[in-house]
Amino acid sequence: MSGHGFSKQLRLLAAGDYRYVFDHATFKVHGKGLMALACPNGLDHPRLGLVISKKNVRKAVDRNRLKRLARESIRLQQCSLPAVDIVLLARRGASELDKATLHRQLHGMWRRLERDVRKTMTS
Image 1 (spheres, helix red, strand yellow):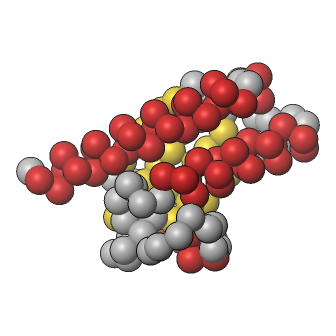
Image 2 (image 1 turned 90 degrees about the vertical axis):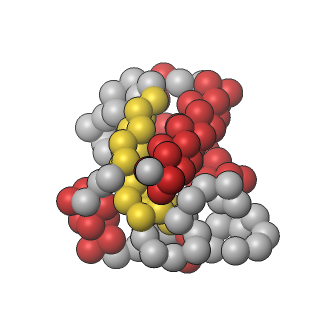
């Protein structure tokens, strides 16, 4: 996967893809106000799905900002991430995080996910 775009092949599009990750999540990474579930996908690149509910992030502006920042973060980190399907879930309190904190949270979560996947593959 070359380049740093966020094409359709980097997204989870079908409900079945989301269901598979929820049912077979091998990896779980927590951040403040966020949680990522992941499972290997058999492809050569990661894919991202977002679950940001109105119940947890009330304002549409905040939901859209969170989605935009998550997509940007995965777009920049796609070369270092393993081939996994990731579902990013927003929890209560995610809307109170500012842009810099959210960026740091996501970057740290991707690094922990990469470390966990690499540890599992070598053992």
